[in-house]
Length: 500
Image 1 (spheres, helix red, strand yellow):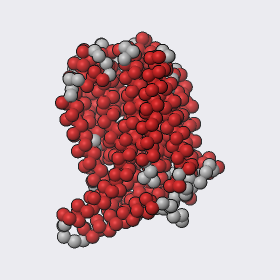
Image 2: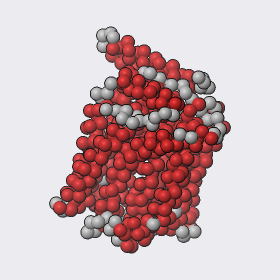
Image 3: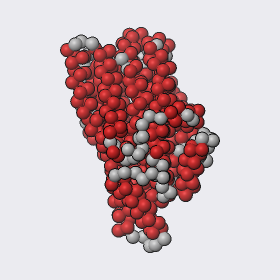
Image 4: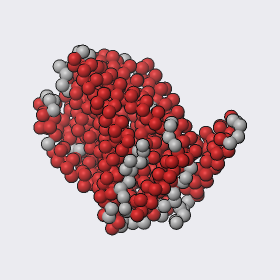
C-alpha cells in the first residue's frame, strides 16, 4: 500500500486518528466541556482546508454564470429573460446531470483516500471523465434543438428564439463540465481545494474582461456572452489538469493515463447513474420553477423577478454546496479510515456551521429586499416583484443551509439510491404538484409555485435529518470497506442497496 507524500496529508491522517481517539474516550468517561471544545477545534482544523476553499470555488464559478446574466440583462429585459431561460431552464439540466454523475468519483475517491488506496484515485478520475464525455454528446444534440423544445414546453416564441441563441454558445461548456467535475472531486477527496480557488479567481477576472469586450464592444450579444462563459470553463479545466500533472501532492494519486480507464465501465456507469439520479432531482427541482413560471399570464415579469431571486439563491447556495463537498469528503475519508465516531461528529459540526451562515445571509437579504434587483436590471416593476418574493427567498436560503450538507453526507456514505427515492417523493410527487395547484388553481402565481415547491424541500430535509442522525456509523464503516473491495474485485456494482 502506497504512502502519500507530503506533510499536509500526514497531518490530516494524524488529526483524523486523534479525533476518533478523543471521541472514543469521551463516550466512555464523564462529559467534559473542554474535551468537546477540543474535538470541535480538531474537526474544524480538518474541515476548514476543504470547506473554505470549496465555498470560494463554487461561489466564483457561479459568479461566472451570474455575471453572464448581468451582461445579458443590461442589453434589455428580453435578453435577461432569455439568458435566464437558457441558463436556468436548459443549461442547468446538463449541470445537474454532470455534477450528479461526477459524485460517483466523490464517494469512491473519498473512501479510497481514507483507506490509503491512493493509486485508485487517478483511475476513478479517468473512468468518470470517459463516461461523462460520452454523456455530453446527446446533451449537445438537445442544446442544438433548444428552440423547438422550449416552444413545445409552452414558452413564448420570442423568448425561446433568444434563449436558443444563448444556448448554442454553451455547447462547448458541456464537455468542460464532463472533465471539470471528476477533476474537482479527485482533488477534493485529497483535501486539495485551495489551488482550484486561485484558478477560479483568476479565471473570473479574465471572464469579466472578455465578456465586456465581446458583448458590448464587439457586439456579439447573447451568443458572445455564452461563448465567453464556455471558454472560461475550459480555462478552469486546463489549469486544474496542469496542476494535477505537475504537483507533488498528486504524484501517487495521478500516475498518468491508463487503459484501465476503459475497463469496468459498465459497473461505473451503474454507480454514476445512481449518483446522477439523486443529484439531478435536486439540481433540477427549482429550475422547473422557471419553466412553470413561463406559462403564467405575464411570463416576462415573472421570469425577470424569479431570475433575480433564484440567481441570489444560487449564489448563496454555493456556500452550502461548498459545505456539501466538505461533508462528503470528511465523511468518506473517516469511513474509509474506519473512524465511525469521527464521521458522525463531522456531520454534526458541518451541518450546524452551514445552518448558522445561511440564517445570517437570509437576514441580510430581507434587509436589502427593496434594492437587490437593481444589480440585475433597472426596472422598478421587477424591483417590486422581487421585494414581494424575498420572504420566500429567505426561507429557501435557510433550508438550503441544511439540505445540501445532508446530501453531501449521503454521497460520502454512498446512499445515493436511497436519497433518489426520497427526492422523487418529496420533490415531484408533493412539491411540484402543490406548487402548480397554488400557482394556477388558487391564482397565487409565481409565489404560489415557489411556496408549494418549498413544502417539498422542507419534507425532504426532515427525512434526511431523521435518517442521518439515526445512522449506525459502525455499519457504514463496514459498508465502505466492502464497497472498496467490491470495486477492486470488479465483481459487483457499487452502491446497490447500501442503505436500508
